[in-house]
Amino acid sequence: MSLPERQLPVHAPMNQFPVKDGELVVGGERLSHLAARVGQTPFYAYDRALLRSRVDELRKVLPATVKLHYAMKANPMPAVVGFMAGLVDGIDVASAGELKVALDAGANPKEVSFAGPGKRDAELRQAVASRVLINLESFREVVALEVISNELGLPARVAVRVNPDFELKGSGMKMGGGPKQFGVDVEQMPALLANIGRAGLAFEGFHLFAGSQNLRPDSICEAQQKSYELAVRLAQDAPQPVRFLNLGGGFGIPYFPGEQRLDLTSIGDNLAQLTQRAKTELPQAEFVIELGRYLVGEAGIYVTRIVDRKVSRGQVYLVADGGLHHHLSASGNFGQVVRKNYPVTIGNKADLTQKETSSVVGPLCTPLDLLADRMSLPVADVGDLAVIYQSGAYGASASPQSFLGHPACIEVLV
Image (cartoon, rainbow, N blue to C red):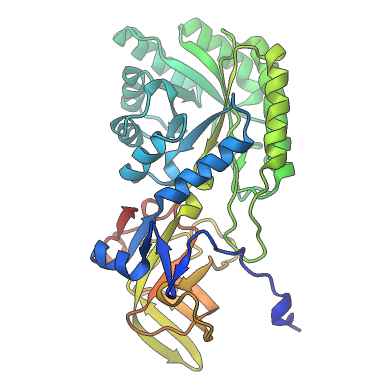
């Protein structure tokens, strides 16, 4: 027997965007006006004020000595990266392409770090020449960087990405613990650190990233504590004192029914305790928290126009001009095991009390092209604007935009 509707889990309130005259307001613009300004649908829109507000919220909670880095893989749109570079302390990149965007945006090379398990020699050369910090992920990279450093006359700045012997409990995506393609297993660290010393590389510290998309403060605090204690142990074999300690991130945002926003209070308190311990145990170390999704995810929406309304055997389908080729994660095909709906509304009818159960589908010739599955939405028709919240991270750049030859979407920062 199904639960009564009032007992079913619901999405966390999506109140970051105000409503005026029935329409969402994004970046100070009513949605219909913004769509006219953009000139086409579908599009992503990212709100500057919300990006700034999220960073301000974190600054109030994190200890002043903890640096905040933006992991730009979450949203590499150049305008977003340029804006974030002026708000955070550093940028984390995952390719030479991202490195170019970060440096073009004015990021300080001293505060740029480069991670990734398959860095090509050409990328390593670019990173050394750019004088950014390279997060080593294999013994091969040590050998390659020794050659490159000697050729360029620049000792490579390196930290080691450690694959720890624990995971971030409750994380949506585990990136540490057990066999992983990321980093160097903790058991191999003494040998790797010795190789770094012999190669004459400029060792700066450690990068530990156990997992992502976690909404449990206790799990995040536990992972940070274990990561810190592991770094203290590994420091005994390091060729130079630890000056850089990236404890990763893992902070999640609520996407699905029943999820609630992360409470940062205990995380800030935990980091304060760790930085206090570090004054004696790792006195030269600067702490870094690396966040992507948490910084930008809630500041973005995806907007697509309804081009057809169909009823098939009693089920209402709102056929839109955008779909999984633009927003793979909302379709459930980007890491979900069991598909769940993102929060969705009809953006130009956001306060309409008349609701119906409908599905928002895209234009692609595949049943996978599903953006909202039988949700209670304002009654919509052709020309209305469907909006997917929580779309500021892993949207356009993480989607197969050339799939089936449909037009690409636009991104705007407002």
